Length: 193
Image 1 (cartoon, rainbow, N blue to C red):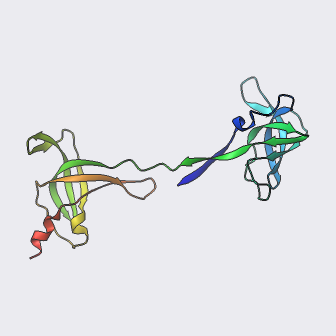
Image 2: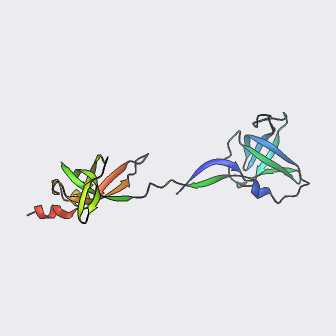
Image 3: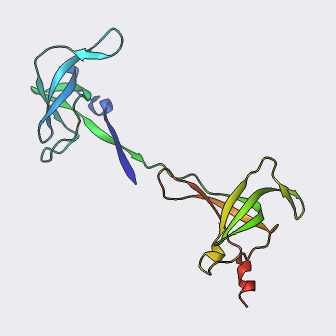
């Protein structure tokens, strides 16, 4: 997925035009129609900002937009305009940026501290203390994790306290995404008899 971010001036698209042509910095004032805009010339101030250079307006054509659709460049956008055969042209397009992806998932061993019911458990991250031995990670806080194996089987407290499980950290679809923790321990099946 992509999302649009503000317009920017694509000067590299205009780099191959001849030096004999007129060039001026302009600020978009309003849409005339299609891909044509009313603009005013601007100049740089001593502080590095811009200010209107003169009262006259020019009509600029944005070559980055189709002529048969209503333009989308907002007012107060600045661009470099080039005189091509008596017509001022600019090239402003919306830059597409990839949507931020949720952070990659991570796995860590955790010890079941307590059952909260409804497939939810309090877990605490572990560190490997030797062959087949685990200990609470220093500074680890208790987290709530859900057992995927129990979610469709109904309520229960199937996983015994002190069981070591592999917990996965995932982001949900809320905005901003919240971190959720899940594990898949099929131990619930032994209690179905």
